[in-house]
Image (cartoon, rainbow, N blue to C red; front, side, top):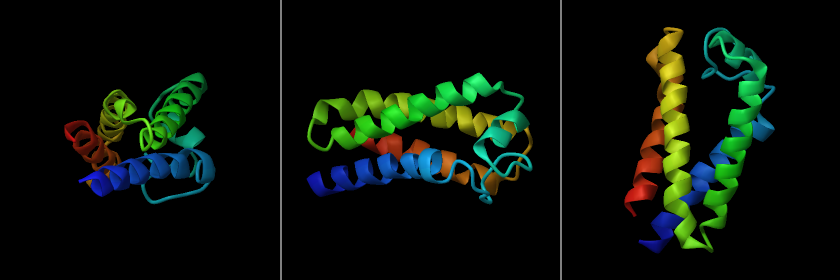
Length: 120
């Protein structure tokens, strides 16, 4: 069970860091609306630039907290709960702009993984 917990923490933590640090300026098939970058995606949702930075700081911080939870287990539940709420918001934004469901799959997958982390 411990290896499963560590795997979930790694998948979610590194997945978020990948999106927000390595791929923030790159086009993916999951960006909302017709956006090619995170900045454009937030604009497509009708959100201000400062909100993108706030969400970015929160997501990166929570991802790092999940990675730290590999060694400090008490951190995993609050970090996964907060990140899950952000993923619920991401899903809602996809619905707002009427994206095809395939674009919302990553947010739903991360939400489900956060739920699994909370339940461990």
